Image 1 (tube, rainbow, N blue to C red):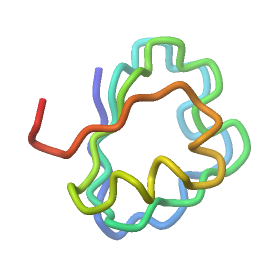
Image 2 (cartoon, rainbow, N blue to C red):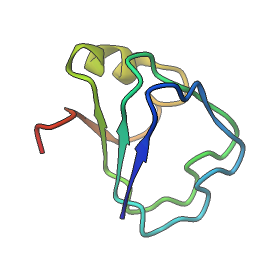
Image 3 (cartoon, rainbow, N blue to C red):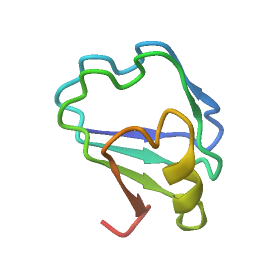
Length: 79
């Protein structure tokens, strides 16, 4: 399962996807990494990749709440 997040999304709220074990990838169209609230992706055991705008890969890799996770970042459209 994949979710496609709008370019205007600024925050992913508390427990937004908590426990969604089927979630494998996220496409984030916002060039600025959204803020992650508590437990936004806790328990998403299949989530391995986040697809982001090409110019934003480094920003996402360094974003608070995101960098502590074992996700791989790809340019949207690469995979």
